[in-house]
Image (cartoon, rainbow, N blue to C red; front, side):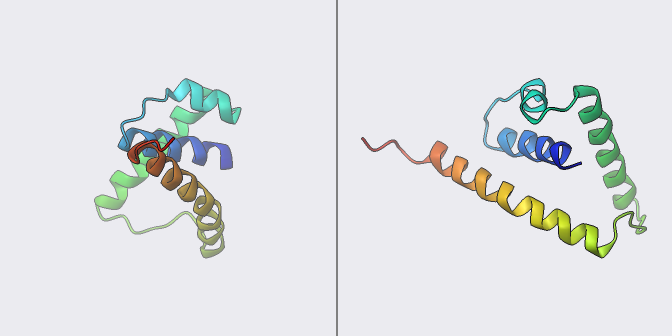
Length: 92
């Protein structure tokens, strides 16, 4: 599941910074099939729709949520560093 989370995270993060990286490239880099990415992505979106509609039942346990947060922390750092690189002028 870790590779799929990375692809979901990076695809949305890079898009928010205006960086065009294809889903195919991200999937190839993480070693997962595009079909699996799209399956998980759709599941994620559907879960979000249910949550917005008032569904409060959660599929993840507290320990799973904590593990995902630990996993996403380094990813957030990578995105933050890359965002700074893109926004700050090059000093030579």
